Image (cartoon, rainbow, N blue to C red; front, side):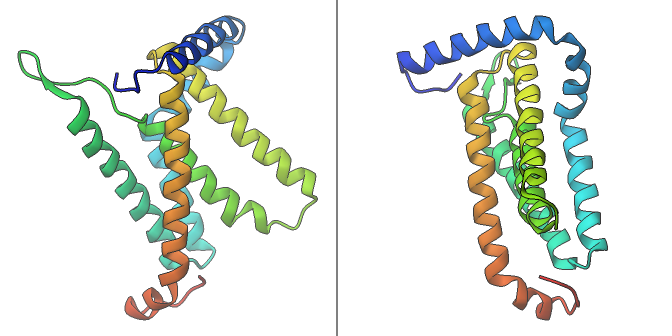
Length: 192
């Protein structure tokens, strides 16, 4: 794996892996749902459903922007992973992706849902915090499943969170700055 040669990171990875494997023995009933939710096809299905939901709410440019930015993030991570991990061992071998694709796309999608939908709900603040807590628990269960199932390191899982957040902030700023002009350019009516 490509990581910094740091003893502290290796210790953190090992401690989290041991803790996760110990906890996973008691939570085996979550393994199948975590496998389904952690599947890359399921994440793409969720992104497409989210885009259709945005379109039904009148955000026509926003729905296409959601799919376009998720695709750009996906392709960018694949290219980066190919540069780093594609090697020749009696044929081309693609060991892994860094950071993990499905975790990064889930973080990207959940930040979109949180900032576009949940923040605008007219409900009590504790309901919004409960939904955000549900997002965090879902991500922890999926990341724990990846740590146990495919021997993903904690630092790689954390890097996928940070990359998803940073890319979301970049995409949101770009959208907010250019959405009005895109409505004119594409000759569509809708909300920003």
